[in-house]
Image 1: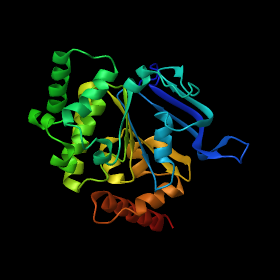
Image 2 (image 1 turned 30 degrees about the vertical axis):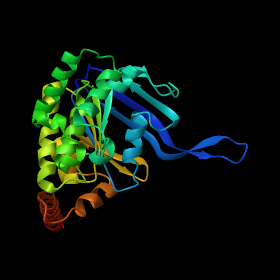
Image 3 (image 1 turned 45 degrees about the horizontal axis):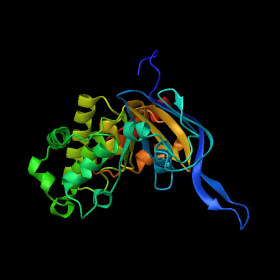
Image 4 (image 1 turned 45 degrees about the vertical axis):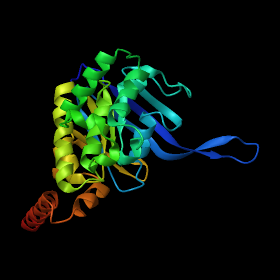
Length: 286
C-alpha cells in the first residue's frame, strides 16, 4: 500500500464482542472481547494477528466478517462504512470478503460432492450458465493443485490437506478482495502446513487478494505476513513490519511470545541467538 493509495480495510477504535441476555426485560447487550483496535490492510497485503488463545485474534476477524456485533468504533471497506449495515449484509460484501477456517471438514458438507460445495457460492452470486460454472470449477481445482476428478469425490475421500485446498478454492472462486484466514493451517501436519502457506502466497501473487492471517504459530507468520499485529487480552499491543517485530520487538508481551518459541524451530533459534547477542552487548557496555 503506497502513501497515496487508500487502504482496502480500515478498522478504527473497534470494540466488539458477543451478545448476552441482559435480564428478562433488558434485551441483549454486547460483552466486549476486543477493545480499541486500530488497523489497516492494503491491497495485496498480508496482515497477520498473533497471540495466545483468547487474545482476540479470531474475534477481530469475525467482526470484519460481520459475524459479530460491533459495540463502538468503525469498520470501513473500500472507503465505505460497513459498521451498522444491520443483519442483512449486502451480497457484494459477502463476495468480496471470504473466509478460510481452521477445520475444513467442518466447513464442507459431508453429503455434498466437492463440485457442489464450490458451485453453491457461484450460483448464490448469480452465475447460472452450466458451461461457465464448469469452467470456474476446473479453474479452481487447477489453482489449488488438485486433480479435476476430485470434483466428483466426497470430503471424506480426501486428506486433511486436500480438504483445506478445497476450502481455499471455494473462498477464492469468487475472486474476493480480502480473505480472512482464521487458523487456516493449524490443524494440518507440518509438511502440509508449508504446502498450504506456499499455495496461499502464490495465489495472492496471482489474484492480488489481501489476507488477514490469524495464527498462533510465529514461524508461519514470519514467512507469509507483510505486517504483524500482536494481540493480548483483547488489545492490539504492537503493530509493525514483520522483520521489525521479530528482530526488534518493543512490547514485553511480544518479547515473551518470541522467547516462548520452541528452541527446536528456526524461529526459536533466531530468537535465542538475538537474545544472547543483546546480553553480550549489554555486558560489554557495562
